[in-house]
Length: 228
Image (cartoon, rainbow, N blue to C red; front, side):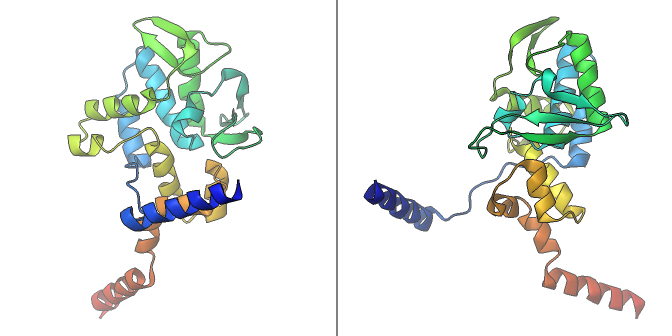
């Protein structure tokens, strides 16, 4: 088995040398774009579901497979209107312990409106909808990207931007917003359930560039220019 593992490692390094380690990232809807997409959602069942899905995806930083596995039974609402929800076993959760994710009061409200309208006291939160009929099974993970793209097109987002959105875009956008707000790496990793800092650093890379020594030098130079 040792030789097989070594061979796989060598093969991976070869691919990285040929193609480079940098991969294309999902375009990230930050809080501002998230609000635009949420506001465009209709008041019918599908619109209520999509609004709750987008708000929950952003707050919990769930991967798309995690998002569609969320259950009403795992939702807890706090006295101040915010909440928590259990994100069950994920890609990085080898032992299946899950993690508790935070939900803002607005996200909880979107969830409550959807769950009430769809009459879902238990089971999967996000389900397929056709007209006034709600399916008993959970939404397929591939549908998460479709929801984001559909609502983005409705909001008039340019097609070139929509084409780059994916089911992980909310996760990326939330991480970047936290980095922009000066939240430390450990807290961002905890919020998104990351075990390694490598991928998080990739997500917030361009935010760090804006805080680099050279960027700060130019900021100082501008201040000196305008004050002089």
